Length: 443
Ligand code: PA5
Image 1: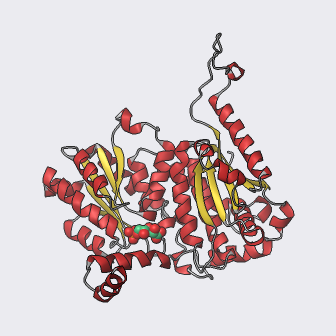
Image 2: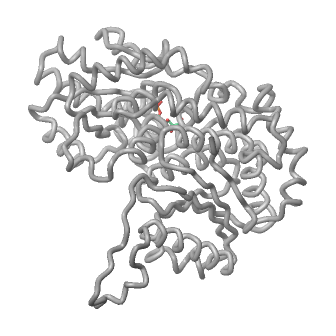
Image 3: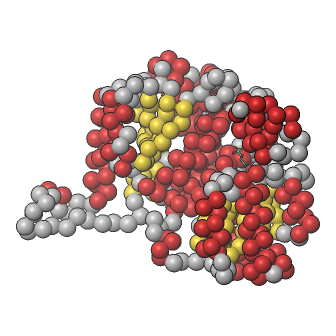
């Protein structure tokens, strides 16, 4: 079976990448031996193997929710929802909500938009719905707020006993308000292990339960990840190791060529949320100590008509990584038209994907010529197995890359700053002093 394939000939020379071999070996050893900073958060490294004993329970829980619910609300923010959403959107029909298949997966707790929550609750009125509430800390405001609203609504609609059967919580084994609440209410729970950070948790129950609820094959996803775990390990030399190469190329471009921004580009709108997940993975892992490549994303060809000008011609601070899906799921050919009033008969009989691929190739050469180095990740097809490969490839490269940059890739101290201010402004007990200080600044 083919694997995903990483190439970088339009970004850097093979010799430069090879020159990273010794440093990459050190980073790999820090990851595998747990000798680097953040070594208490390395549970994701062997997750494709370690998660296997839980797959049957996750699948059975998903099947029960699928039987009992027409809508499943997945509550979580950041690493507690992006991975699941990325995989589900990549695999499901672009029009799933209009097609009416059941159950539909919707999301909450990823914002504090009053209209969003009001509209969601209106939609759920009198519907058979269930809730998966995901929060590692069990104390994050956005999901906690959404959970209280939706749990109350569900209990009002079906009664406490039936609501209990339709709620699953995924949280810490012991700590946090969500653990206390789930235990007291008797909800089914899964544990997020202490050594797995949110953005590295998609291959744990955090990602796998919602993905299984959407009807996708979590075994195949984990198999693909397990394959990349082998391919990207320290046992594979840099010439054959895609994660090592990706980490080397992006660091060289950042440190030596001033490429401060990496654009992840796709040519299939279904990959939009994969880019959102990737942005969190790299942004939260590398953006610290005044360092880090800024991760940004574009959906092509759509954004060629908006961001394309900047990419081609703006500040030369960009590198670009293209995710290329080699074979789409469906075949659609362009029809011939005798009148040819639109002048498009030169495309007659061609697959739509052929047009898309020429856009992809043409864009790459244009951007390279314009001073934007290009990397490419070829994904043979959009299925669970290759998405599993892609996820593990990005995670592994992120760990290596963070260590190359000499930051701790596994903490996120910066995320706390806004929370402290928000709690102070809202008058949360314990934040009185900060409240006074911030109100003084406002005045
Ligand atoms: O990657 C992370 O650690 C964060 O993005 C968290 O996933 C996010 O802040 C949500 O945290 P929690 O799962 O504790 O509610």
